Length: 494
Image (cartoon, rainbow, N blue to C red; front, side, top):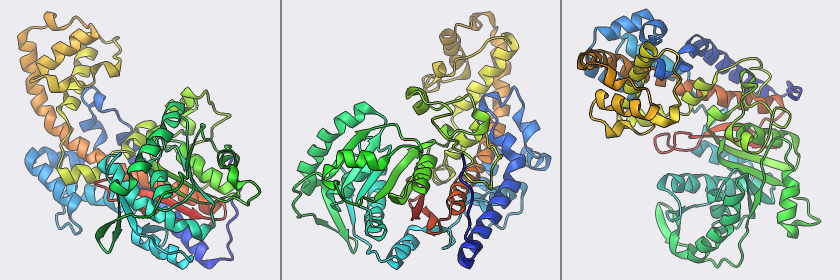
């Protein structure tokens, strides 16, 4: 059950921030709600449901129909990358309008990483140097750990925590840096018992090679870390975390040396999947032993909403959890109570327009082929249902749609290919050529909504923290969104 809101309206600064967050939420909702049908559509049904004609505004559609594909795509790239767009076309207006409803750094409730450092200093902390570890993790993970671990370690003395707890950390990449680079006792709690069982051996290997693989960065220069590492401060526990999980009890069990001490926790999470992000915030608000939370969310499609009452994510399914054991993932706040996004919209929120624009990526032909296949099946076999997983990764093996259809026909046992004349596929190819431009532009226009949806999810979580009486809480743009698309973290101090 949601906790009752208890704003401190005697605090003018807090009241002002809450008012601004509400205003932003209202603005995003007003913009987004009429467009949720676009966000929730299935690209598989692009042709069968005629998304182009039924979902896009007529003025935008007509403008694009009169523009060559290459020109329209270039216009999109320009509008998506320029700070000041002079072009007043319907396409540029769509892109700019969507971007204006996304989160932006404002040095108040949405901070840059540098602005978070200033907050930490104002709370009495010192900003520690970054430590770079390139081995034992991908370049993306290395960058994220390097950026986040320094700030977590700098925040730790400010909140008086005794131990950092990582929610859903798998093999514990973040706590490796926290314990080996910054000497912070750290615990990784993950529901994957096999990963947890194998992780300690991996940590010992990293510990033995630490001086060779880790570099401290000072003033832009790398230097070796010569301090001796006498013991491993990183422990692991296998548990499925919900809002009711007693993290302090798990810490005391894994760290018997804390016996008799007043233990405070700093709850972290580097890309907490689905409901684990919201449940981490609920733990922070309800368990006084949790002194701070530093959480980077991801996998929004695994969040639960009221409309998903009979749908459970993979973690809930595998651990036998149902509505009684778990809490709603969205919305969290009282202010957004009753508002629903939909699973496809949440899945869209996990896509990266920054990376698409930076790399100028057009959608794969597989989207078009799959949509056309759906059209043929509905025409020829209207009662047939397709198991989606069976058609993954077949497009790269095919030079033409006809080859794709033949392979799909064999996999799905449709028995259609040999019964259709060659002229049928000639007509299909003409339709494909016509549909490709529409699908590309629809895909890009729909992608503009991704960050808007993500912004509303993040603002909802921030609003939840304020509703529960916390004022030291921020959204922080922590990472470069091209390198790490889920770039925002939530930081709150009790």
